[in-house]
Image (cartoon, rainbow, N blue to C red; front, side, top):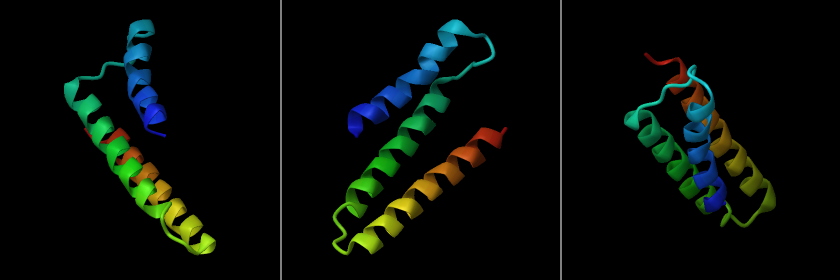
Length: 77
């Protein structure tokens, strides 16, 4: 999972090499790193929940929160 998060962090850097439409600064990469790290930590914690139904609900809540934060950051100035 953590290798996947690192790969997601590298995708914008790779995209910046091929298009001028994507211009990220250090703060953008830092925000993505914090988002991925926080999501990863919460997912790791949710995976330890024993009842399967509760674990799935917790994982869905964590992923929904991550998508919500990502969408809010995407529309911020």
